Amino acid sequence: MSYARAIFHIQIQNVFALESKKAKKIVASSKESAKHTKKISFTNQINKLVCAVLFWAEGSKKTNHVAFTNSDPKMISYFLSLLRQSYDLDENKFRVSVHLHEYHDLLGIFNFWSKVTGVAKTQFIKPYIKPHTGLRKKPDYKGCITIRYYDSEIARELTALYNNISSR
Image (cartoon, rainbow, N blue to C red; front, side):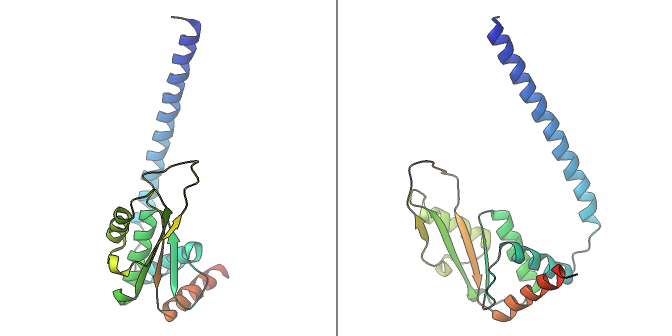
């Protein structure tokens, strides 16, 4: 075996060793966090607070409606779950806006986000389609979405909650 080939094999072994250490740390962190979250009783009050904090981080600062923007399906799904658990919502007041690149499959993305959000595709508004620069293609990227719920009282309550939390 040549010297260069031996060095290459050593480097590959080091990468696998690092990945294994990292994976073990991730599993340990996951187990530790599971212990903490099991102790929390997710009451309606806690759900509203978590919803308000997510809204604070990823929501619109306008108070005439609730708008939440993200590209992570788990984040979108969790925010909507908290919003639906915390408030008596009229599902017809939802609107979804998708931002994606022109090379993406629009119908497939609409189907994907409709399933994630539980919002009918008929409530999706015209998408914002960014021109492709030709630099990178992310075929698995599902776009970024903004969920809007038109209720100023809920928007003001979420805003008040995160403002009260931050001033403590």
